[in-house]
Image 1: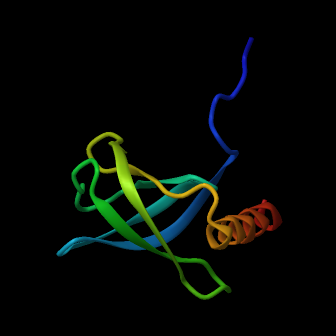
Image 2: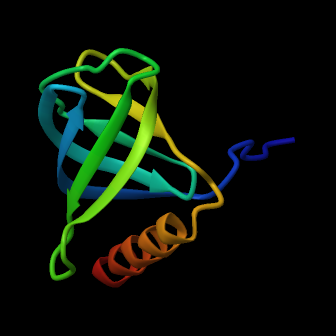
Amino acid sequence: MDRDRRRSPRFKSRFDALYAAGKEEGAGILAEISYCGARLGGTNILPCIGTKVTLYVFVQPVAPFELTGWVSRHIGEDGFALDYDLFDDQIRSLVDDVAALINTEA
């Protein structure tokens, strides 16, 4: 059986992002987002797994939004994944907004 075992649907994206992990700051591309996590690529620093990261995503024409999560894994040499609270209503609303923007651009 070929089922997606993820906790929530993921939406591919390509938005500029900045992030802060403690005293370190970096930049990258938000490559994928869901109700419980996000994936960044093209990052210039890789925070350690388990590090709390605040992500600032720039979505036009909407004002930048902020997400906070924890690094769950590294992806290659220049990317990482974040996990955050699935039941946060604000995150759910932000992901819905991003998904709507992605679908209208397609």
